[in-house]
Image 1 (cartoon, rainbow, N blue to C red):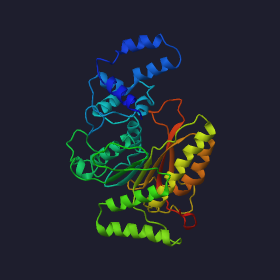
Image 2 (image 1 turned 90 degrees about the vertical axis):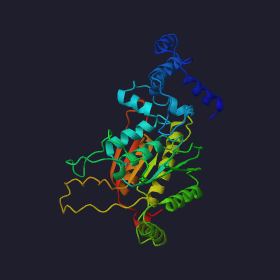
Image 3 (image 1 turned 180 degrees about the vertical axis):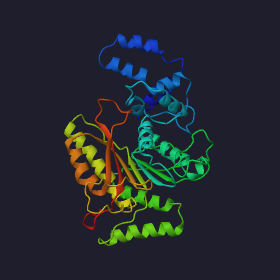
Image 4 (image 1 turned 135 degrees about the vertical axis):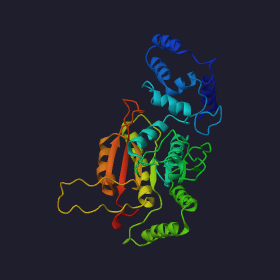
Length: 357
């Protein structure tokens, strides 16, 4: 990203240079086409509104004046911001895409407990911030339970959190450089390069904070599964999330294939590293009974994709083959006209011996 764009964003944070909403409306009404749409999106952007309210922080640990990604700043800004989203922007994330993961986790509640999480396509770091924050907030050491609520009580956001306790491990990878994020280990490299994937796997294994016996058992199971096709790999990662997106060319066929290439790569990494879920209890011969929902400890794969017939085939032939639960979600933070969606995959069955990567 060029320096001039960063300087532009920095200047937009100054109230002296930021036009008032009324001025933006008048200016937009005098323009046509792309200029009017651009100004309208800026007028409704939650980060613009956050700065008008005096917010200067973009992330739980962001420094004043830290630049945010230009594309993330402009992306998906058509919808008016709700009060809760404005509050989140004031608390601060380094990119607007963070709100998509916030919404996914609010819906599926998978960022819980002492998990090992790999974030693919992490730059500029919004998803990584959400992962670190939520693992800490929703861990046993980072929340207080109501005495009468039982084990299923939700975290109370009004209670003080134990931010200092290590809760899980977060590893973030992107081809672009990232600012350091407290609580995460970052790696820069091209994920489509097999050597980079291997480096990432070794980094995860080396950074695993579980007891030596547990870690040795899972790593040994993974290695034995790779060496002996008759065995299933045990895995050593709880959650893989992918917000990767290829550079667009304007050619729908080429762009769809490039997106699916990243989806296949993310799935391949997940198959090689995710922990296999325990099989649900048998329901006998009654095939009409739906499968039980995945437990809170189930391994999770989240992949961004763009809607297409090829994507539908990929879901049916690959994702549903390896996961008991696959759901497509279009987030409120995405533009209405955008083809962007996310697959949420849970209940990892493991890899059949003949198809191990």
